[in-house]
Length: 112
Image (cartoon, rainbow, N blue to C red; front, side, top):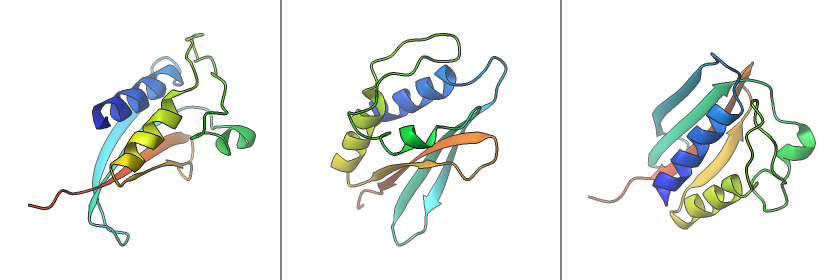
């Protein structure tokens, strides 16, 4: 499930980036009242429209063509959010980075 989540986030980053844009994947230790990891997949590009942000992780979003006209189903983020939740994590949009769109996944670390 988690492989599918990261594959979807990386494909979306590529799909919605212009040619020669930068895509970053960063991993951090989550420290906000959780023991686990946070992975961010970020791409340079246009932001996400406010009316789309409200529906991003639901099955109510229709597919948006990518920068080169790529097609999709509009199901990827909703499925990814569901799979992350099944693994006691959370998936969210971090749009606080100027000129970047970042999707973050927080997951707990398995007990040793």
